[in-house]
Length: 303
Image 1: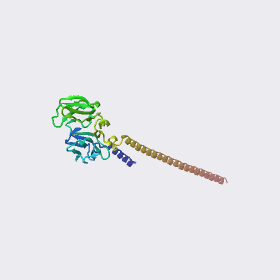
Image 2: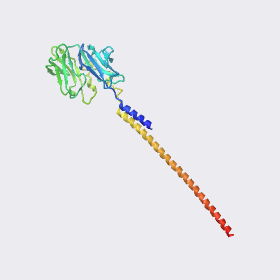
Image 3: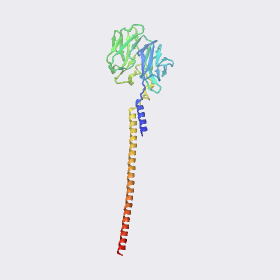
Image 4: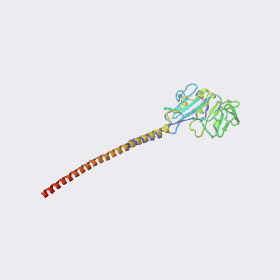
């Protein structure tokens, strides 16, 4: 009984101590848009270790290709693209061998002369966000116009715009335009709730608003990771089942012990009654014998 209880306790502790490794994809420089020829470094990061993670991407040419398979070069836990091309535009993510995936990042490499530097990761509600409209060959402080979902927001004389205390209403497609140089591609900015630790399903741009190859999330992103940590409800159910079994076993042992005790008491009473009856019979025989002897003695005396 003690060994079973110890094993159950160890199993419960092992279930509670299990955690699911969830990587986070980071991009350096931190931007969702790049010029052709720019250096880009992508890393799969997590608290414990980055071992076992694979960086994959979807592009217009190929789906679910991993770093080193015709693109990028592995360096420790990073994948470096020394000189990016427009063909590198697409959706990037980290994938574990057992199934879980990280956040998805939509990168755009343009052959034009203007890009919009915007947050590559989701922005938390209440934070300030700065957008920079940048040209490839001239200073980055030129006047620029900023657009959201195709509508003009404002024109800034220095080429950058700050959105203070962002909310869900600020989520959308952003782009910029510098007169005489051109327009940047569009980038989707995601705003998450303060209590949200992973990007919601709406974090990927709608296919109708961005180029189809780069706006479609990886096929595996629609299904929940199969190796998430065990549900707490299952743990409680297991503990309850074990506790119930232990109670039943104890109840059976107690009933059995009580029955055996009553049987012993009954047997003792029967034996005692038999002995008592035998003693009574022996006593009556002795009395009759004494009376017979007494009668004989009286008769002899009279004679």
